[in-house]
Image (cartoon, rainbow, N blue to C red; front, side):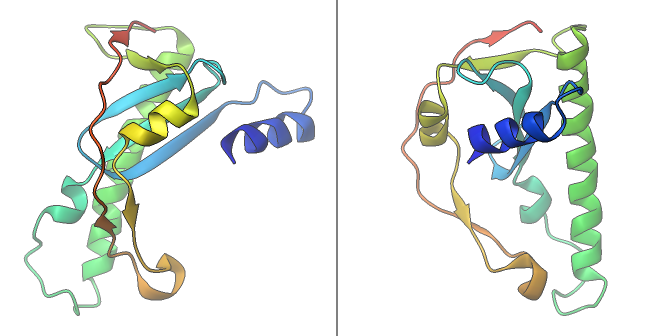
Length: 143
């Protein structure tokens, strides 16, 4: 799906330099990755599951509960956007802007933590992680 999406965006905006940031929720930590087969214009960014796992001082049925969760998630997304911009701009300061280089999407898919959840448009988001087989992360390379 991602290769098709980036191709469609490039076809739709032929005079633009198209870049795509793919956010992956509910992961073990923070990491930006680039697939060799897609190039540096597509970055995959892990968003930590801590946002969803950290208890809030309110009941889940409280109307403000999901708004607070989404507010916390938006900060995590902003961090992913900032790190991707550092990579795309070619800056690397004290490790900021480094990324993992994967040979292809299939190897990366096997490494990330899969999760599932209800339709967030209707049910809110209460995802849960699925079991995964651990894989070795490629060494980070400077941007």
